Every structure is written in C-alpha cells, then in structure tokens.
Image 1 (cartoon, rainbow, N blue to C red):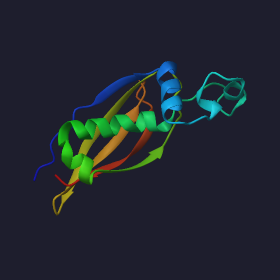
Image 2 (image 1 turned 30 degrees about the horizontal axis):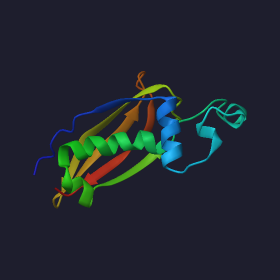
Image 3 (image 1 turned 90 degrees about the vertical axis):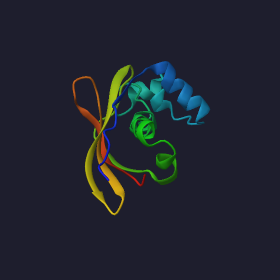
Image 4 (image 1 turned 60 degrees about the vertical axis):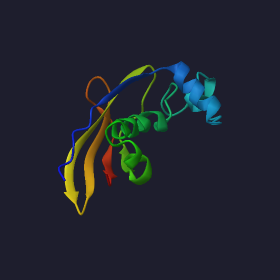
Amino acid sequence: MTAPDVAPVTRVIDQAGVDAYARYGKDPNPIHRETPEAYAGPFGRPVAHGMLVLALASEAMAGTFGRAWAESGTLKIRWRSPAFPPIRVTARCTPKSEADGLLTYDVVCEDEAGEPLLTGTATVRP
C-alpha cells in the first residue's frame, strides 16, 4: 500500500482556547493562564498546553484515516519549543515508510515562521 498524503491542519491557538482547555481539562496549572505565576515562570508569559498543539497532528491523521486512526494510530513526538498564544500552528504529516501494512509519517507542528514546536512520527494501520 502506498501511504496517502495527509492534508495539513492549521489553527490559531489563542488565550481563550487555552483557558477553555484548562477549565474543561481540569488543568489548574497557572502557567497556562494570564496569572502572575505565568509571568514569573520560566517563559515569562502564558504558554499553551502541549496537547493543544499535538491535537492538530492527530486531527490531520484522522482526516485521512478516520476510524483506522482512532483504532490503531500512534504518535511519538518530541517537544521542540513552547507555543505562546496567540499563535498560528500548522501540523504536517509527511509519508515516510510502509512495512507490513503499517504506515509511518514524519510529523511536525510549526509556527508561522516555520519553527518546529514538536517533531516526531505517526503510525497507522489502515
């Protein structure tokens, strides 16, 4: 099987989205919100949850593979840089290899300047 192309996904992650994720995800860490702790923290300002960035790669793979992604998809990533809201993020999943019916993709989520926020691989068995 030849690995199909995966359409990139681009989203703006803004502070309202980060606040909603913190609320609904029950993540009270003040580093993600506009709090004194965030401004005094290691980044000097609020930082988006990594899962908000990673979710874009999963969305891209799900758009191509649907149920197969939900049932067999995996992501193995490495964080490269924090995402400071508001930030426009694009997830790209590029075919890498196929072995025994398992498709592997190179994954990158990057900011508007093309700087990687995370890199890694995705695998799926369609």
